[in-house]
Image 1 (cartoon, rainbow over the protein chains, first blue to last red):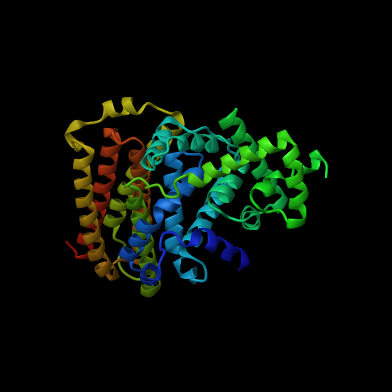
Image 2 (image 1 turned 120 degrees about the horizontal axis):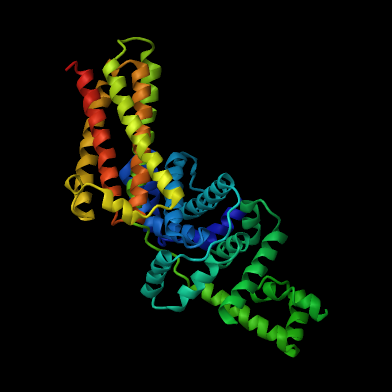
Length: 196
Length: 229
């Protein structure tokens, strides 16, 4: 599918970057598809940090919610592994699953208001920011977490994860125009909060 | 193009999503418009900061245990389903097994109700911790981790044994056992997640220990029944 190819180009190469790594990852996927839980755990160890970073941002920095979402994603991944055909990168497949799971859960939970970053989660994100040596990232994470849900989703998926407008529109079941409007809103709010 | 039109194109201009045809007049306008020029620079800074954010963050170490537990539950449920369809209606009622299952379910359901109630009322975890019994609670989370691994190993061993012996159980008992284990596993997962949020809470450690004990006890008693002891 065209949109999957776009996502593969942007996020699919992570974390396996060379041919040898890709072959090893495919072998682990094949073993996991055959029911090998140890192979699936290796996939989890390899891909979960990337998926967890996405979950944290989708869940407005709430570590507990993000962990539950991460668990849901990998439990679903295990149950649906046989539907992964290898025509897109495994990372892209997991990311799509994460976004879909978050949307399904949100529909089940009903309307929820956007939350600011709680202290305990600030410390987690702070650790991540410190580990990369840029303290300013914490302000950015907090500002993203404080965005209204629609704007936050559009910003995280487009500007952080590298999805295209069309891909986001398909996943969120909205028009490309709506995605662009939410992105514009997110960037405007971030500028106000970070630069005013 | 007017200023009003161009300011709506600045996002696409910064992200390089304007056509060449549209790009030229926008660039020309920006060169002479202080407001649009400032907005473009600000947008570039925001996008640069977004690009610098860490793309990977390690999840809590406890997250995999919950996933592993759900996978094991799925696997066993699938095998139990196959077993029920294979055996048909036969065998004795196993009243004792049903009673053991009922006790375990009620206890685990109690754990789930307690945890849910605690979450919804926002009850102080500190107060809960002070209610717990120190005699039955591991001294530290590290000690509990060792205990948890022992429980997991024992439960897995008993489960394997039960899988080999389940042909001697009535299908309805197998189905009930499967549902009971699911209830206990859900209580374990819920307590594990609560403990991840509140690692110092001794009551949660005790509740999790109790759920593991129930699981091991239920598996042990059921395997003993299948052997007619």
